[in-house]
Amino acid sequence: MKMGISKTSTEVTDTSNSNSSNSDCSNSDCSNSNSNSSSSTQTETDNHISLPAPYAEGEKLLATHSNYLYIAKVRQVEYNNTEGWQFLVHYLVIFSIWDEWVGMDRLMKHTEENMRKKHALDEKHGNDKNPKAPRGPLAKSKSTNVSRGRKRRNESVIKPKPALDPDKLVSIQIPPTLKKQLVDDSEFITHLGKLVKLPRSPNVKDILKNYFDYRLKKCGSMADSVEEIMKGLCSYFDKALPVMLLYKTERQQYQEACPANVFPSAIYGAEHLLRLFVKLPELLFHASIEEETLIGLQAQLLDFLRFLQKNQSTFFLSTYHVAEDIKISSNK
Image (cartoon, rainbow, N blue to C red; front, side, top):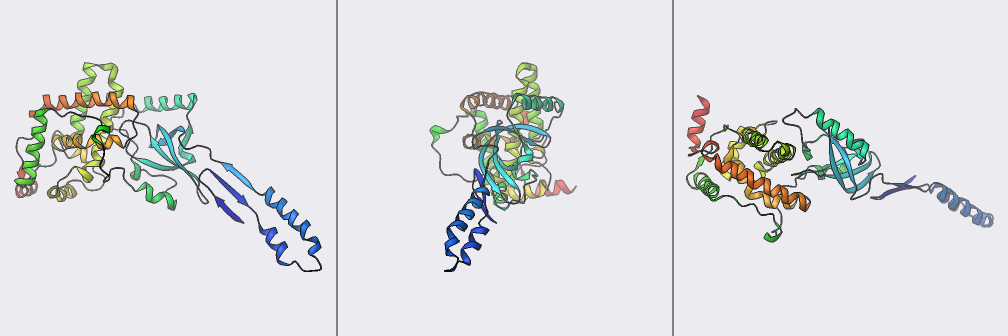
């Protein structure tokens, strides 16, 4: 049996009869070759099966992840002889930075009935303050042993990119006092050899929750969208910090402060969160966020920065510590 594979369909053709009929042809029975060939062709036609992909590239659907349903879009379709259909999906939520290869068991059609199921799940988990958002390579999938998909699932979207046209990036204006905070932060780390003492209080999760509570009191009708943005910022921070938010002299401290299963957002504070906003324009460029959503997101991010500025004396350290002092303090 010879298997043929394509990205949009799979073709299975049985050519065994054709091979056997041609191998034994002699002068005495060549007169039957045409009939044998015709029979083989018919057999090949009867066994030629085309299976269309159940989801097409670009199709919007629902994908399950950690007991949640997320709206997603199919970016790529492949067929694997062992696992069957595999789909590279991109989660269409604010700050979605991970694509993931998933199997049929994780996907549902984008219908009104299935959207009602999604809303029911959202309401069921409504009291969960830290729901698990799609996490890409950390997500466990039943299709993890697909060889072609494994490498892609371990590739982070947060990686060095070619230089981008500044005109194509979303503008996030950092207030002047927070810009000075960034300058002081760099001075402490790179020139004075100091570090932020960890763990920080309030940490990133605390600050994001404080902002959500603040907005809830100010404008309760926007609570859902604000909560989603705060979850997205937290997810971005956890993924971006070890990749692009640390100075070289901070890496050892990170390894010691964030062992396995400890999220940076529970350890680091406003100093490192502010660094994320310097990188956000580039990250958002690669997040495939629709323009209308991006405009609303930009306004929300600027409001969050104003909140940081208003609480700058509370959220940020006024001085850092030398590494030796931090070790001595942590051993007491």
